[in-house]
Image (tube, rainbow, N blue to C red):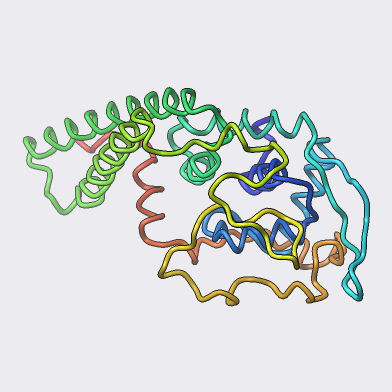
Length: 273
């Protein structure tokens, strides 16, 4: 099951653990929480992802409603299989090396697992990264001894620094988790009520409030948030329309820090001898 799920699909399933909602609301929340840094959030991408999740029996349609002159919207509910799929996918990708996009989503959704399991998975991930860093450092030292020009080692040196930075970050995170310095939300996720620490949703929407506060340097509100009265809601997009096929990843919107994260989690080939 985990192999069939995409990062976007996992994030949509995780949203439904917070409550029933329609695809338009799912996309609105992804944008409000700035999760478009992690997964594609175009209308077509979300609409198609929900359709695939329904075909896999991970979500089920509850009904169709219309609010005033707005387009009809279909509300979905997470199934038991969908709940199990989220936890299985996060568990699989939280300690997997070489899949940076999946790891970022698994980390963002790690609260769907018990704290003790997250600590164990990240500890295992740290051990693997430490081995990679040691092997790469040994290769660099050997290359230097053999007189390999530094010009040919620049990218490898950068990757080594990123690996070491990732290890430093992991060590700090694990210390905070073990010391219970981070409130863990696993106990209330999927309980049918707002997760602790979230503001209540406004009266214009039926979904839960944002998962986290936006970065202060993020785009101004309104620049990425869709107009709730706009006719291009999820359920108004035909499956064969161009928008429905638009699943382009928003790599251009990713920060340099995100690209560094990708590099630091990609296993390196052997250093040239």
